[in-house]
Structures are given as structure tokens and as C-alpha cells.
Amino acid sequence: MAYQTSQKAFLGACPMCRRKLREDRVRIIDKRDAVTLCCATCVSCLSSLLFSVSAIDQNIIATAGLLTDAQEADMLLLRDDRAVCVDDALCMYRFLEQSGTQGSF
Image (cartoon, rainbow, N blue to C red; front, side, top):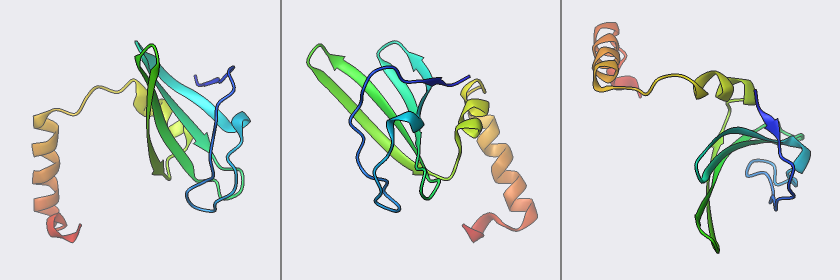
């Protein structure tokens, strides 16, 4: 389950519609050690921004974000899945090769 943030955070504008992102639409998806994975959903265009906040040092915090069409519920489903391994990638490659869609990306 995602949790609502309890601390104030600076959020800029939505990368799609440029409207201000609202703090009440930010959810923590996962937290491990010094890294917190969050999802912010724009109330105007419903785009989602997946971003991480990392405490590198006592005085340094780094962030990285990704615009996505995935919603909070999608991210929660993926959170506990196992990592993709080489066999998974080869299996997908063979599937795409057999279905004739390999070169259509």
C-alpha cells in the first residue's frame, strides 16, 4: 500500500500540462535505506511522475524523475515483483522474433 507523505515537499509543475503538482497527490511507493520512491499524479491531465529522493550525505539530497502513464496502482503491483534476469530478456526476444514484431519498435 502507498502512503501519503507527511513532510512538506517542493513540487514544480507537471511536465505535460505545466499546472502545479499538488502535495496531496504524492504517494510513497517504496522506501529502502536512504532512497524513497514516490509517485505524483497531476490532477489536471492525470499524468504520473515517478521520482526517487536519495539522501546521499547529511547535507546532500538527490532526486531523479520519470514521466510515465503508469498510475500508482500499477507501480504498487510492480514493487514486489522479482528483478528481470537474462533468461527473461532472452525469452522476450525469442517471443518477439517468432511473432514478427522484433523490428517494429
